[in-house]
Amino acid sequence: MNDLDETVLDIRQADQSDLPALIELYQHLAEGDDRPHLELAHDVFERFQAYAGSMIVIGLADGVLATSCTLVVIPNLARGGRSYGLIENVVTHRGFRNRGFGKQILQHAADAAWKANCYKVMLMTGSKRREILDFYLAAGFEQSKTGFQMRRLAARTET
Image (cartoon, rainbow, N blue to C red):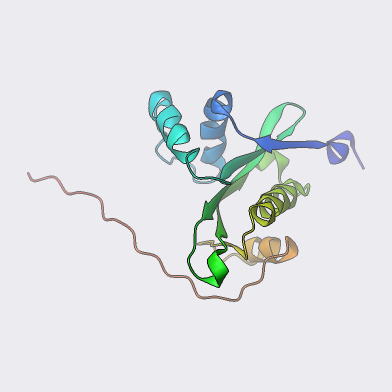
């Protein structure tokens, strides 16, 4: 075992000062994805904070932002009025993968959802790669539902 394998992950909620590093980390989620300018990122972060119980969870390894996920706690009138949690934007920096950090960040988010009295936590992945699916299974999630999505088409410009 080398020193890197013994790195302790410091997990906490993101704050405004983490936004530049978080935007950079998202390139490990979708390389080449559009990056919001910092002013917009601050505005989006402020709006996100309005969702009680929701958070962007980050994990730092040796002071470097290594992993993150977003938990949104959604109010619900079914299930006795108990909310449910949705996890999105699960990402680990390529240089920190296969060290258990992704599982730790997901567990932290799930624990936060349980504290918010959610009856379930769910996530979706677009990946069909076996290693990604196995990662989520090993993190305690089960592949039990069928997911559907609808995406907004990009606006066309008239020429």
